[in-house]
Structure formats: structure tokens, C-alpha cells
Amino acid sequence: MVLEAAALTRCRHRVYLDANFPEELAVAPENSGARQRQEAAAEHRETVRRRLFDEHPDGWTLIAPEGTMASRAARTLEACRAGADRIWGAVLPTDPATGRRGRSEILLRDVERGGYIPVIVVNHKVTDPGQGATTSGLFEWKPAVDETRKVRSQVRDQMRVAHLYRMLERHGLASPAKVAGAIGYAGDCILVHDLDTILEDYDARLADRLEIARGRVPTTPSQIGECKTCPWWDRCRAELTRTRDVSLVAPGQRAEVLRELEVHTIEGLARWQGEPPETWPQGSFEDAVVIARAWLADAPLVRRYRHVHVHRADVEVDIDMESFHEHGAYLWGTLLNSGPDSEYRPFVTWDPVPTDDEARSFAEFWRWLSDQRRTAERKGRTFAAYCYSRSAEDKWLLSSARRFQGRPGVPALAEVKAFIDSHEWVDIFQAVTDQFVCPNGKGLKKIAPIAGHHWRDAEAGGEASMAWYREAVGMAGEPDPAQRVRLLEYNEDDVIATKVLREWMSDRAVLDIPFVEDL
View 1 (tube, rainbow, N blue to C red):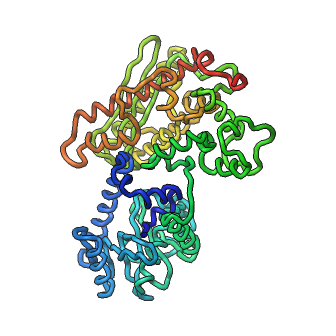
View 2: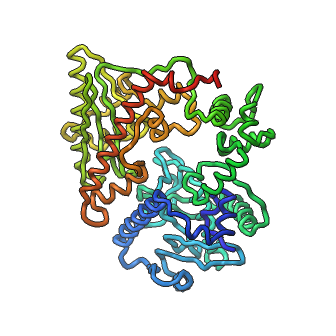
View 3: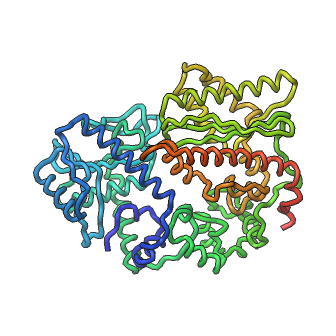
């Protein structure tokens, strides 16, 4: 039995199922979101590889991806023993004795101490603005404290580099410095990991997961965040539903706390009397009890108050932004509602982001939005712009103003901040959160159908839109106009959903949704 480092941060029950039912896992439907993340990660790794090879064309040893894993591992060991300075695509020998299997994008020879330093390339952030992280430049290994960055903790990265270090150690190839590196999404530095602070936790996790995989430690299902993308979720959900397990309404650490208090079922939580548990980890415990009661009553939402309120205006604009990973915001979709009529208007660039044309589409969007605000004010009418879960829109409004400062039509950062801090910028997600308990989640795709809205495309969703965008702009071939239409219709349905939801909250929610005290 051998494990890759990814198993060390996965659900323990999934580790058992993966190891003991490989035939079922092999035929499980592929998760489209996982596939897209893998494709994006592969593209990022290739981008980093090209940059590194361009800087030192003769300084790298490439372990070509062709051939078996065993042959690639043999070539990696041969390169290490020949003293190669920089190795790309390293595969380390699978080791059944210790239960390890792993690959490292980069192995750097430790010139001062001997041995090799593993460096991984990942498609997520590894640092944030701040200070105190230890980093090195991309092209020369010189670790130093960085006064412009702080570490963004990524346990999965820590486990992976520790895994690789132990595998190198097994062959006498690990640097005595006990350090490793990670090149993140920005691809502008190497975050240096101090393995002395990681290895003890790593060793304990590996021992635990190996015992589970070998069937020596029993595990049971429990709902956690990982379940959304797990190939075993249908199987686990059926078992949890049969036992009416409390994790269905209080997932993650909350279920663990309840089980310690001998509350194992939804009925047990619904009957709770008295004060909340002292160790309740997150969120409102009262809401958890209401969710349990709603689950038993098959209620999709529960009103917190007898009356439902949402901010309304004479002129209303719904806004939904579409971005592609961290590369840029390519579409600002709007729905103008002034009187009985509504008009959808997109502001879009079909140049693959990041692109200078993004500044043009953002400037046109901002100019149009500002015109609607000024026109309403001039006519003595109230104005409001709506979105659903404003964090993404706020992020790209501010980011676009910063990145494209000085471009024609791009607003000053202070102007954007003034708008998002004003009463005219309304988050319907927050209105839902404040006034409803949501047993099945608060996402727009969960809430809007309760108000009667449905998307034209059965596959509509954030992860699907990433795949559509790749085809729309021709990332792997010719641009596909049909996928551009699909994205615009998806975005239009999103802004219509926000409109339908607030109108439903204003008119019918009190009739359709039970009040918490009535459960």
C-alpha cells in the first residue's frame, strides 16, 4: 500500500474507500471542476517551466514525461547521482516499505551542503502582502526574510514537500538544510518551507492514513466541505441519510462537537434544550438547531422574522461579474430595471485575460453605471445596484481600478471605494443571510429556485463557466462563438436571478416560507 501526499489532507474515510475499492473508484464519474483545476495547474506549471528554462537554457535536466513511472524514477535518481544542478519533472521511486509515492516539479541541488531541495509548483497563492515570509528568487536559490510578504498557510503544500523530503532522505539525497520550496500562482518567488516545523505532523498523518488504507483503523462517513467534489459522496450521503446523521445539518467540526455530547442524529439536535455547547466551533448554534428542525419539516428556508425586508429603489441595476481564475474579470453583466421593463447589457472582452482590453470593458461598464446613477439623481429618483455575494465583485472593482489606473475611462480607486461603501450597493446574499436560515446552503443556485427562478442551461455554474470560457476565447484551439453565447446567457440568468429573488422577498416570501417559531 502506497500513498501520495494528497491523501494526508483528505477525509480519512475517503482514504479507506480509495484504497479498498479501487475498481469502483476507477469507474466513478469524473468531476468536471477537478478536471478543470488539473488542466489549469498543468498550464501554470508549463508557464513556470518555460520561464525557468528561458533564464538558464543549459542549466536544467528535464525528466521527460514519457515512459513508465519506474523508468522516470530511474532517470531522476541517475540525474541526482550525476550531480545535476536543476532537475525538472522529478519522479521519486515508489517505496512500498514506507508507503510513499510522489513527484516534485523541481529538485535543486544544495551547492553548500549537498543533497537536493524539493520545490513544488502550485496553482494557488502561497504568500500574501505582509512581512515575515522567507522567500528566494526564482532563478537563484538565496533564501531571505521577505519584508513584503507573509506566508499564506497551505497545509496540503506542507504535507507534500515533507513527503518529498522523506523520499529523498530514503535515498540519501535530502539536503541537510531541511528546507523545501513552493512556487505559487503569481510565479514571482519561491516560498521557503522550514521542514523542522512540519515533519512531526507529517509523520503522524502518514502513519494514520496508512493504517486506515490497510484497513486496520475503522472509519465512518461524516459530511465535510470535501464531500462536494468527492467521488464517494453519493454512497456516503445514502448512509448518512439512512442513519439521519447529524453531520447532514451540522457538517465538519460542528458534528464532531455534537457527537462528543452524545448528539448523533438530526432528531437529537432538533430536540436540544438549554445553552449552546461551550466548544461550538463556528456559526450560530441556534441556527444549527433550526436547520435540524427545518430538515425534519422538509423546509428549504426558514424566516428569522415575521416580516422580510430588502432595500428597493426607483431605478434598480443588477450586476454580476465573471472572472477566469485570478487572471482577470472578462464580463460585467448588468440588468437595468426602470419601471416595468428590464434590459440586459453585458460589458465584455473576448481577448484571453489578462489583457489590456479588460481595461476597455471595465471602463465602459463603469461609465454606463455612473450614467444610470447620475440620470436617476437628476430626475429625483432613488437608485440601487444589486449583486449576490459582493466579495468577488468588490475584489475585481477595486483590482481593476488599481491595475488600469490612468487608462481612458477607468475610475480613480477612491471613486470605486465610495460606491461600494454607499447605501446604493446592495448585497442580496447578505439580505438572505440576515433574514433566513438556509438548510441547504446560501448559494444563488440554491436560493433563487425557491423564488421561482431557473437557469436555461442545466450545467450552469461557476466551474462549468471556466470550461466554457476556455473554449470561448480559444485557449486550446479556435474561439467558439457558441460558448460565448452560452456564457452571456448564463450571466444574464444570474442577474435575472438576483432581480427575481429580491422581488420575491418583497412580495411573497412571508407567504411561502415558515417562520422559525412555527417549526
